[in-house]
Each structure stands twice: as C-alpha cells, then as structure tokens.
Image (spheres, rainbow, N blue to C red):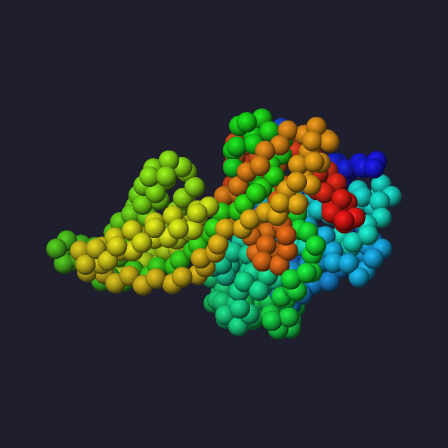
Length: 436
Ligand code: HGY
Ligand code: MN
Ligand code: MN
C-alpha cells in the first residue's frame, strides 16, 4: 500500500487546535517547534469551537459525523460490508488548565489523518473505520475522568452521571459553576437521555488509540514507539476535613483544630504509604497525588475551618492500590483523634486495570517489524478512554515518545516525525484490522 501521511497538514491542524485555548498565546522558545499552553475544559466556548472545527474537517474528508447525548463525536468512513462491526480509534481534545497541546489531540487528529491517508492511498475498508472524539476525558469540570467513554462502555450509570455537579470555578464567562452535567450538556445543545449513550458489546471488532506516552521511557531508551499491553487502575476520592476556625491572633495554639494542618498530615501520609508500597514491591507502580486543595475561609489571618481535597491514586496492581488506601485510612483515624477534626470521604471511582487484546498487540508488533520500527511493549500509567472501551471491545494503544516525559504542562512536546510515525502505524493497523 502506497501510504503517505501528510505531516504538514497534521501539524498545521494540531497547531490550529492548540490555538483554541483559554491560555494567552505562548511558545516555548527552547523547543525546535513552538508549543502552545492549552486550557480547553469540556463544554466551554473553546471546547465547542474545537468540536465544530473537527466536524468541519470530517465533512471535508467525506466522512459521516454523528454526536451522542453527551457529545461523544463519531466520524465514520463506511466500509464495503455494513453488516460487519467497525474498527475504532480516537481520543480526546479537552485539556486540563495550563496543559500541553499533544495530550489527546494526537489521537484525534492522528486518527483523522490515518483515515484520510488511507482514503487518499486508494484503500477501501471492508469494515467501516470510525474515529471517536470522547467528551470529558479529563476530570477537571465534573470531578471524574473519562465521562464519555465510561458511559459508552456502561461503566458509569447515567442517572448519577447526570447529577454530577460542575465544579469549574468562575474562571471565564463560560463557567456554569454548580450546575449539573444535564444542565451543562443541554446548554451545549447535547440532548437526550444518557442511557442512550451506551454502545453494544460488539460495536467495534477492534479498538486502537494513539497517544503520547506522558512518561520518559521511550525517549530515554531511544525507542520510536510503544505498544501498550495494559493501563494502570485509577481511583479518585474527595475528602472534606472539618475543624474549627477562628482569629489567627486570638485563637491560641492549644485550642486549635486547624483543618489545613490536618490536611497536610493526610497528604504526607498517602505519599508515604505509596512510596512504602513501591519500596516493598521493589517497583514504582503505585502513585498518589493531591493536586489541589480548597481552603475555607481562605484568609491570611483566619484559622482554616474546612478543607476540601481530592486524591488521585493509581497502580497497575489493584490489591497494592487498596493496601495503600487501608494504611491511609488508619492514619486518617489517628489524625482525626489527635487533631479533633472530622474527615469525610467520597469515593468518586475505583477502576480495574485494562488489558490489551493479544491479537491487536501482535498485529501492531508485526507492523513495527515490517516497517523496521524500534518498539517496546509497555504499560500506561496514565488512564485513557481506552481503559473503558476495553469493557466493550478488544483494545490496544500506540504510544509515541514525548520530550523528557513531560505532560499536563505547556512544555509537553512530541516531534512531527514521532507523530507522523505513530499515525502511520495506526493507519496500517486500522487497514489490517478492517480487512479481518
Ligand atoms: O489523568 C490521566 O491519566 C489522563 O491524562 N486524564
Ligand atoms: Mn490528560
Ligand atoms: Mn490523554
């Protein structure tokens, strides 16, 4: 097959998508190719702009477009045998605040380019090929990641999803703070019941997502491409710590029940237990992060009476993740007693790890061998929509190196050559899987 990836077109589109951001124009001059800091939160004006632009590209390419009740966007190239289930690829275009321009977008625009390049090469798929742009892969607005793919894979029940509250602080005119997902998605013109989002188990015969590694291994080992064999198991919790506030001058130390000091002990406790679990296993797979803290009343001369903090904890091994939580829970009880505070815990999600499908992994390996591409099989420590597509389809992922392993930062960067190579492997995989 005489397949040519139009790298210039793909990079131009990645940079245009990056310009649809709530961040001021930036570029990291230290990089050979400028990058742009990106904030693009689901259902904000910038997100809706990006969606409309992507649908325009799909129309131009002659593919059909449909959107479901939460805005998952399906871009399909109909195969010659409509009775067969399709081969899928895709990722996300939403971005956390002050992120990079490649997380998710490489999988969406790379997937589109893979399909266009196949079409331009004269290839005709037997099974339809479909690009999926997922709604809300990032947890920023509603507190849970992969909202769209959880609903597609029936991993999240629609009623509790619709009741999720918009947690976006008033950062721009589009913030609809405190409204439910149902209100926010209908304001964005996505209607219908979320129960209609779920896909049947045999909707895709195979699913492959292209993504930057978001870690340092490929670059460090000088390897061109990663074939993901498993995706770590994410869990997230929300904690409220209630103490007793008061005047920073008049409230004496023996009388204090400082919610922020208690929170600080909790943060260090979960970090300590994650490190200890890794030391005991001689590994690095347990990770625990408290990425934000909300302090009430938040005044320099007022003792904090309440703190809200989220915990993001992951591991490739669920039992080890659970053992960290058990040790953490024991510390919480001790902190409550010692500091006379009350800690309440809300479980947001506690998912299993996802496993890639052997047939698809082998197909990707064969392509790399035929194309003389240095590759390695590896796990993903970030979660992805593929984690939940695994509930309804055989999956795998293709990773490309990212500079210094950096991601979720404006200096996130992957070279045009890596992006084109990943797109090429994706195209060859889709061609092969659609003919099986
Ligand atoms: O957090 C993650 O793993 C993903 O980037 N949302
Ligand atoms: Mn991300
Ligand atoms: Mn991502």
